Length: 452
Image 1 (cartoon, rainbow, N blue to C red):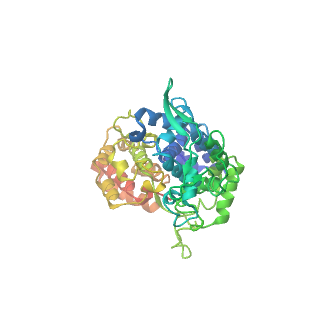
Image 2 (cartoon, rainbow, N blue to C red; image 1 turned 45 degrees about the vertical axis):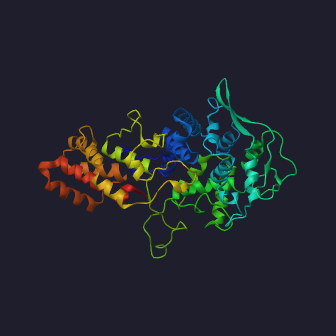
Image 3 (tube, rainbow, N blue to C red; image 1 turned 45 degrees about the horizontal axis):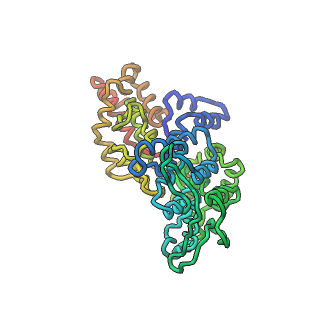
């Protein structure tokens, strides 16, 4: 929900509580924290292409601040989409307009809007009939037509976004005029009057739109369950049916009934039995990867894992050109040079495809965690958690318990406690170094690196 490990005291308080509604209370508390806006702004900055190299430093920062403020204010997703699509005026006053600056022309804009907000890939239809879907060249260029009015000009308030005129789109092969119309609709005889984007935005965010609610619901489900009901999440089409159509329809209806507010949907998903299933397979679901009969292991995103390393060691990461104290999840600039973030799959935001973020585990990642001088330095840091724990706890059991709570959000099992105490007992004259080694081993475990 917030992309951050609970503290040992937070984890212990939750585990000790006997309240029947403790999960619901915790979810509500997390949804109200500022880290919620940080985490969801990061994800949507990927999709909306907050790219310093494309937009410029100041512009990209303004664009990101608008996105984060939208999540901080709990802006409904239909409002967010409408504001992005219909942005106009000076970009200093309307940072949502940088959405248009992130695109490479009207064709790219049409493809971006379709993929991000409708979960439909139309790029293949630019030159020919889509090989796997119903979309034609005419459909593609009709979507382009909604953005043909958009241009920029210098104004007293700086660069301004305009939507004016009545530009004509022609079929690249037949030369016939194509009037703008939404996907799946019929072409009108004449182009809509005024700002065409408003017609598209109104059509797209209607509660009964066949794509918008299903796309957002599918993306949310994939975020929490590790896999979408439709995979890839941005490829909704008849030849790629959902694994559970009834579930997807129910989630989409739930989202629309709640006026596209993400938080009720998050509460519903996290309260579900499906979300709370164990990742341990049984004989009936050991090979199941698509029906949500068990929890799926998924590696933590690069930024979340980096922050988790900092939380466990108690030592912040210093990012180039960024003031000390920033968490990786708070980095608005995807171009900040950082070996760990790049190795663990941070996207460059060159496209809107979810596939640009690498989520798989690699040998290089494992070797880095095992041999990283940066991790070793954090473990040995004079102001770090290892030294603090050795000073705080006279008994080794207290150290082991707090380490497990900080890394896994649970106490150690009896076997785990016995193994750890046995190891620490053999290094009694090098206690601090032994605690460093124990922390290192926990941070290199699948339980730490993967969400499940």
